[in-house]
Amino acid sequence: MAESKRVLGSKHDLARARTGEEAKVEYVELFFDLVFVFAVTQISHTLLKHLTVLGAFHAAFLLMAVWWVWVYTSWVTNWMDPRHGPVRLLLFVLMLAGLLLSTSIPEAFDSRGLVFAGAYVFMQVGRSIFMLWALRLHNKVNYLNFWRITAWLSLSGVFWIAGAFAEGETRFAIWIVALLIEYTAPAAAFWTPRLGASKTAEWDVEGGHMAERSALFIIIALGESVLVTGATFAELELTTGVMVAFLASFGASVAMWWIYFNIGAETAKHHIETSSDPGRVARIAYTYSPLLLVAGIIVTAVGDELTLAHPSGHHADMASILTIVGGPALYVFGNLVFKRIAMNIVPLSHMIGLALLLVVGLSGPLLNPMTLSVLTTVILFSVAYWEYRLHSRRLAASH
View 1 (cartoon, rainbow, N blue to C red):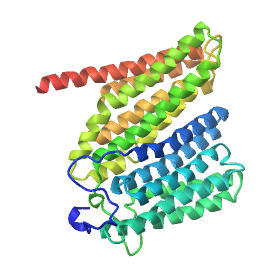
View 2 (cartoon, rainbow, N blue to C red):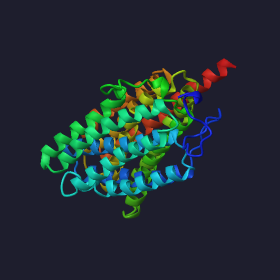
View 3 (spheres, one colour):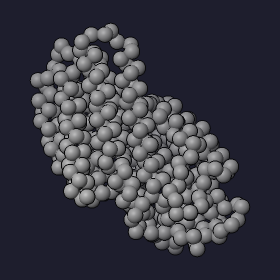
View 4 (tube, rainbow, N blue to C red):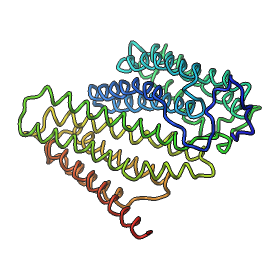
C-alpha cells in the first residue's frame, strides 16, 4: 500500500518505514530461521529412512508445509518492523511453535500428528490474528487483506486438526486438502465472500527484502546439505571411494550455490525492486517457485548420504539413482522456472544440463553411486560456468 493509505506517525504503528531504501534483514529474522535449519534436516533424514514412493510423497508434503509457514512469516516481516517489541515477540513465539513442529516431523503421520497439526495451525492462524491487531488502526487495505487470509487459514486449520485425529492414509488425504486450500489462496487472491479478492498491486512489497529472505532459505538448505555431508563423512573409514564421494558431494553444493547466487539471485532481486507490481512477482517467484530449489537440495543431500555410505563396488539401485541424479535435476529445473518467472529468460545452459542429467540417470543402472555423483557434479559445474560465461559476454557487449 502507498504511504497515503496508512495512518503515519503513531507510536503504535509497527510497520516498516518506507524510506525509499532497501529494507534490512534484521538479526532476529536470521535467528528465527535457525528453527528451519532443524526442520530441513528432519525432512532430509525422514526421507532417507523411508526411501519409498509413499515416503517421498510424505517428505514432499512436509517440505511444502514447512516452507509455507516460513514464507508467510517472511511476508509479515516484509511489512512489519522486527525492531519493534511486539513483532520481535511474535517471532520468538513462532520460533517455539516452529521447534515443536520440527520435532514432530519424523512422526507426523504416526504418533505426533496432533502436535504437528496443532503447531502448524497455531503459527498460521496466530500470526494472522496478530496482523489484524497490528494493522487495525494503520492500514485499512492490508487489514482487510488479512481478514481474507485469516479466513482461508482458519478453513484449512479445520482440516489440519481433523486430519490429526484420523490415522494412516486417511490423515494424509485430509491434510492434502488442508494444504491445497492454503496453496490455492494466494493464486485466488484470497477471495472471500463479501470482501472479494485482494490485488497484488496493493501488497506494497519491499522487493529487495523479499528476495534476500528467499535467498537466505536457499542458504539454509545448502548449509544443511553441507552439514549432513560433513557429519556422515566424519563417521566413515577413509578410503579412496569415500574421499572421492565426499569431494563430489561438496562440489555439488558449491555448484548449486553458483547456479542460483552468481547471477539469478541478484538479477531477480533487481527485477522485483524495479517492477511496477512487486507483489505479483513476489507471489510467484518468491512464494511458489523456491520450493523446487529447496526440494532439489534436500533430495541431493539424501543422495550424498547414500553415496558416502556405499560409494563403489556395486551398481546403483533405483533409490540411489533417483536421489543422486534426481536431486540435481530438480534443482536445475527449479532454477529454470525461477529465472523464467523472475528474469523472463530461459537459460539454454539449464536445458542442456537437464538433458545431460537425464542421460546419466538412464545410464545409472550401469554405474556405481560414486561415478553417478561425480558425473552430476561435473554437469552442475558446467551449467554454472556456461551461464556465467554467457552473462559476462552480454555485460561486455552492453558496455
